[in-house]
Length: 191
Image (cartoon, rainbow, N blue to C red; front, side):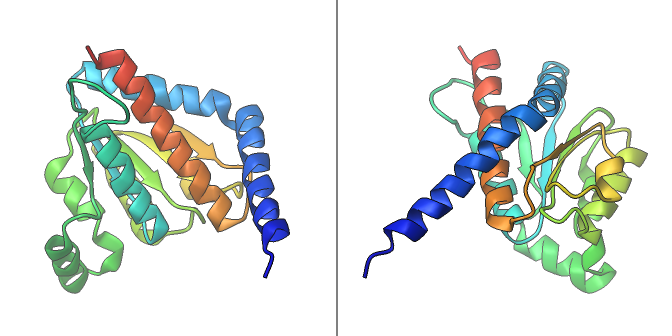
């Protein structure tokens, strides 16, 4: 079997979204980077959340910030709110799935910390509640989503709306953006 045309089509779609990301989202990505740099200079923390593939993205980006993207001597204080299974299941069971991220933020986060909320659809109730809690705590909020404007995209300091409505393409762009965050923070704060 020969799948080269299908493979090429997938790659070309991914490249096309990334080209549009440059023309449509560069300003917002830059604003998010500036917010992250200020927060780290002020000894603030970064929290990330999302569901499904976006949960994996929040863990992946956290890993790049705490560990390293290339080579550095520092770690960025970042925490994925999706990583503790016991906490997630307890909060879900006791308070409902919609509160799994907001309850954690209420316990851990402080004024000036950053929440990076990832939602491909922009409609995830638990992510919306996390953003609402972050606003109450006077956190800075970065949302990464798709091209459709939603309630979530209007609640933030900066919303990076990937110019696509195709979930795989949006998620690929979100990881690229996370790598950009980690790479720039590494250069800014590494030795």
